[in-house]
Image 1 (cartoon, one colour):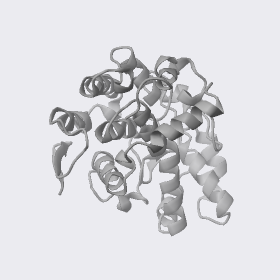
Image 2 (cartoon, helix red, strand yellow; image 1 turned 90 degrees about the vertical axis):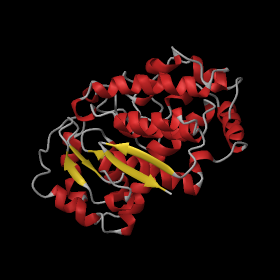
Image 3 (cartoon, rainbow, N blue to C red; image 1 turned 60 degrees about the vertical axis):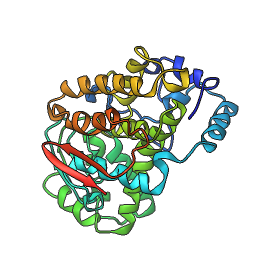
Length: 300
């Protein structure tokens, strides 16, 4: 994957001290409330890079195998995430999912766990409403803005959950969820993993961490976790060993999960990602068997 050179800009910049690079209306609202796991920040590692440097990164990535971005691997990634987030491989059945899981982030909803308290759900509904003004969630925008960054349901109960489930039957809203997932979580995670020299498994490990912890720069946000890992090990792009770096990243991530009541079950790391790593399956080859929350999942 990527090697040194331009990657030094990624490796040496202290991510937690860099202001988030905002794109497409996302912001880092709610980061303090979420322990650094704000879900609206985008590409903080690009902060300070010139257009020429970003273009060079793009060209380097274009020369690499698709990895997790290959259609079959991307499908597998969604199944792996759904097994941990919703205890199912049927990720397409989760567009209408919505509940408060008591993690301090308000309602969690949709295919990737958009949250009313972490800005990404608000951004999703705002963007969707621009394209489809008469949608059934538009009337909740004032309340969504009010509760952003908190666990509050003020102005959302009792009708929001019913409205979400109803809107999730619309193909346009499903596509809006897909687009938000890729823009905020999947694409940035895979891009940075490739720049760090990681293979398909490493790209998934970054993606799953981005989903659960959010793209925040605080100590429990994805970029903060990556920065902590960089202090202990070199990425493959820096000349380090891929397995050793990922093992340390998972250690740091596991510790962060244990600090949050809703995420103290770390089986998505222990009996899934760590198992793939110790099996030497850096390409995330199938068939795969793993356990999450004591339940066994298989992909042929």
